[in-house]
Amino acid sequence: MDCHQEKNLASCNCTYEPCPRKGACCECIRYHLDSRQLPACCFPPDAEKTYDRSFGHFARLVERGVI
Image (cartoon, rainbow, N blue to C red; front, side):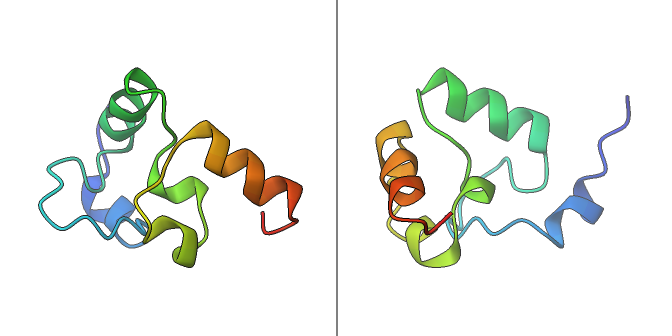
């Protein structure tokens, strides 16, 4: 399977600038799940900027109706 990294970058909302996985969604998802987190694309911009990508943070946002 070919990676469409350049195309994926258009919708990647990750604000962590030195990230080597930007646009490489399969690598990003694998990295974050291995770290017991969700990738930036699962969070709205304000929540993503906190860099708290934990399952708990995601659940709290869902409970509040943010996502």
